[in-house]
Structures are given as structure tokens and as C-alpha cells.
Length: 412
Image (tube, rainbow, N blue to C red):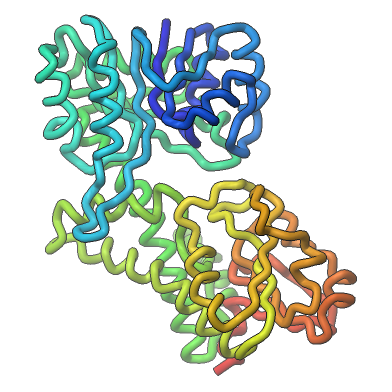
């Protein structure tokens, strides 16, 4: 089987890697010439365990090639971004539409087209399907169209692409069947066949469920800071109940899924989706909450920011609330940023970041931050204070003041 994958980012590249490792010929398409050149040398641009070796071997064995343009194939998979439109929160399908139109000249009867990009409910039937019908294809008879959303965790993408159950949403039952045959090349989890609109809404609701539950924890943290209760103790005690699983509060919600997908549902029914919108508003308010408490701790001075990735132990900083926090603090503070998982010429070492700092602000739960070099910190800071917004630091030397969502009420 030959597979052409449009988009070689956090989902497209791992997907290409697995198809190439499972005896398929793969063409990976993207718009960056530099990225294409590097991929064809076996050099990848994302931090994700296992992918570099697979791509390097696939290039060597000539089963993977990166290209600026599509090629004829048996199956085409769309994995491009889908941001939301700020004015009305609706799904911006422009990248998906462009990707679909780009493959039309290469389509042949019998091909399968799969949209993996997360899209709003009804998008496949109302927007994507007409693109191929206009080109002369009859969906379900000579071209098979499906929406098959990914559901993976950064840092475990390869394992989860293989073992997670997969939703296969066909425009017709035959479309779902054909798409399942494509994923059958490497997926070991269940292939759940359904219709496209069900797959679209299922994916959006998976991330909305998580966003709403994070919002509940974040709201609890705010309440506890206001009324003088340890939020972390409340969560620990409540979670002893056999049917309760409160999440941990944090500095906000990032990533290309949780921070965006709930809006796709809200935009479809804004008068009804009130809980969904309120949860988004709550999570979007957390950077302000962090900044307000930073100002209570120190009114000015130098802040060492630890971590800008939205997800611990990855270099994925898409939609990271850390950047909003940094932007809000920058006018009044000297900012030094350290993130061992992101290559950025403006980021510096832990030593340089904490040198003469007045506050360490932890914004990401990298393993490196769970057990910091406290001797270094004590040497670099005259009055060391840590504000841990991820609640990952359990114990510090007595000379260091530690704030987290368990004791913010002490600042009031």
C-alpha cells in the first residue's frame, strides 16, 4: 500500500513513521522546504520517543520520502492544523480545504481519503465531501472518504497510535470499511466503525470532557485561595472517594486539542453549550490568576521561568499558557526562561536563569523540575522563593519558600 500524508507535524510524522515501518510506501507532504530537506536526510523536527530512528531507517530503505507536493497513492491522510476563528470560535477549515484540494489532481478511482485533523461536527459532510464530488467522484462508490481522529498523548504517540482504539467515521459504511483497512496496517486497538459526524463530535467531546474537568480543578484552586483552604489537600481527600477523580489545577490549558476543540462544539450551539464555554473561560483565566499571585509574592525583580512546554517532558509548546504569562509579566519584571526540552536561542541554563533571581516560577511539569538543584538555587538566590503552578515540587530546604495551589491563601 502507498500512503500520502499531508502534514508532517506532531501527528502526520508519527503516522508516516508507522506506515513506513509496516511495509507501506509513504510520501510525507508539508509546506516547509527546510523541513522537507531535513526529513529526506532522516532529521526530524519534533521531540517524540522512537520516531527519529524509524524515519532514519525508512529514508535509508527508501520507503519514506518527504515532498512539497502530493503523489499518487492508494490512501491519502490529512493531518493539518485546525485553529479556531477568534471572532466566533468556529473551526477554521482553511488548511483542511487546501490540503483536500491539493490532492485532487492525484486521486484515482478506488482511493481512500481520510481526514485525521480535528474538525467541527458536520464538516466532512458539509464542507469536505463537496470538494471531491465537484471533482467528479461519487463518495462511497469510486472514492472512499472518512474522518478518523487521532487520540494520542505527547511523549507516548507511537505506542498510543498502535494500541489505542480508533474511531473510523465513514461518509458511508463502505467508506468506513475502506478506511479501517488502511489503519489495519498497524493499529492493534479496536477499529470502531461509525459515521463521520459521530466521529467528529466524539473527538471534540473527548477533549471537552478533559477541559471541563480541568476547569473544575482550576475553579476550586481559586475558591480555596479566596476562602483560606488548601486546594491540594481538598483534592487529595476528595479523590479517596471511589468514584471521584478531581484533576490537578495548573497555570492554564495548552496544546492543539484541549485549548481549541471545545470551541468547535460551542460554535455549533452557542445558546446551549454553556458549560463548555464557561470551562474554556475558566481555563483561559488561569494565566491572569498566576500573574496576580506573582505580584503578591514579589512586586518587581527577576523571575526565572521554568518550562514553556504545555506538556511535561515534551518540546510541544503549542497554545502554551506559559507564553501568555510571560507576556503579562514582562513589562514589570526581568524574565529569564529555562526549558531543557525546547531549542530556543533566547532560553538559558538553569544556572543563568536563577542567578540573582527573586522568584522561580514553575510553569511546566518536566521531570527535571521535580527535583531541582537546590544547592545551586541557594547559591544563586539571596532569598529563594518558588511558585510551583504545576504542584510537582513536594519538598524544599527550609531556606526556600515554596508556594503552590495548596497555600496561595497565605498571600491574601
